[in-house]
Image 1 (tube, one colour):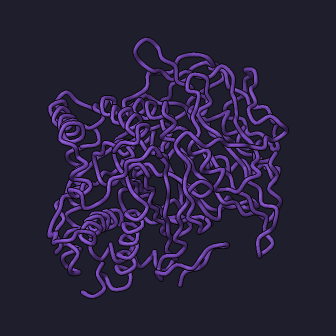
Image 2 (image 1 turned 90 degrees about the vertical axis):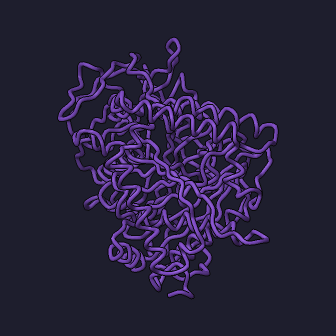
Image 3 (image 1 turned 180 degrees about the horizontal axis):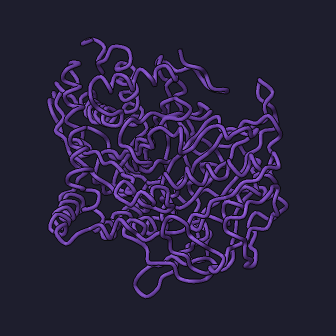
Length: 580
């Protein structure tokens, strides 16, 4: 049986609960990337959100009114040296400091160590793609941690923890400056920590951070907000929500989890007066780009032409909207809304077991459901008969899978995309055997793409020219015209976060009770993003959809199909109950 989150409405579908539609005060965006290694056993958890279906404001039209801590949310400090591996007792000073290059020693893995104010390196292809989106206020990553503590969560303790991590994580000290015809990362001369305490509700702060633009040349390219709770929980614990936002050009899903994990370690040390050695995390080269071989260029050219022709010349929209079966919005509002649900721990185990018995990963299973669910939306809406249609799904892949093991937790934006069009037929979900056969085809393609053909590596060279779709969609949205598209859905799967982002931290008083992560992707070529992961043993799935490319009713129908099929799979082993 599902457990209800506080302030939530019971779900109509048993294994899942807390279906939510979030917008201005309750919205998020999810970018697509299978972050944190495995495109394998994925299962996740979700946060206490409200049920209101609110309408999201236009992109770049929301302004965050923060209540600064001590009236100084943006604090710059002059350069001071801090020993790299010297454990320090907490609480610490409120003044963040930047380490000098001569004070830094990188142990175990290579990093690019630049002095404050020095150039670090040119942006890689995917980083440049993200930065172009950032110029329009898009591609912001945001994660919210719902905190529960046996002791009061003081803003000054959280501020000290955020400062301590910012001092040691070099991607949090970057700005982006054009150097000739190429954008470069530069280390800020002064470390600025944009931290503030919020008086508004958590999801309002979350959504505002999701929409805020960054000053790339000045930095910082990240923010942190604390939303305290004025009341204790039913069991007498102190609660608060910590929201960390960073632009996608300096971070990805794994990096965001590392930042949150480091903050939690320091926060617990701060509140107990313990010693904690904050790890130094340096910038590494754009390794993904260097993996691209000369023999990959022919594939890259074909892939680029396919995307260029399909998107800009032939108009992929006719395929994406099933030749007019689904409505394509024409609006000047580019906002992201989210629907999400989560499983109980027991049903999460059942889902994993079903997939193991079938010989596929949870990711492959959920991807197969995503294909069929999208096709079913078209079938449910067509006036005549629709027996088959092409559906395109892209996965965002953690590229560290191809790096030296020493770089498995190196920070930065190290992701790439792989995609596959499948011809989905009515029969693919009609019986138990048919569905699992289709899931195995999805699984085999993904295995071949990642481990044999290495398509994510081959695709790396085309991201900068393909960023033009965001420029075009920004202008089309401004004119309330139909946007350009290039795939039906993108997935981002972090797998099981048990080790990457633990909920408990030793004997410390503060634990994470829930997690919500998202990325704003309104101007990219997909109308929606599926985000899923497992946290505290519970699978969480959310649909982030973009109002300039998907209507509310289509999004609701698609997500209802998705979660309904997952429920059926857990209960009877098939996505259609009548065929069980």
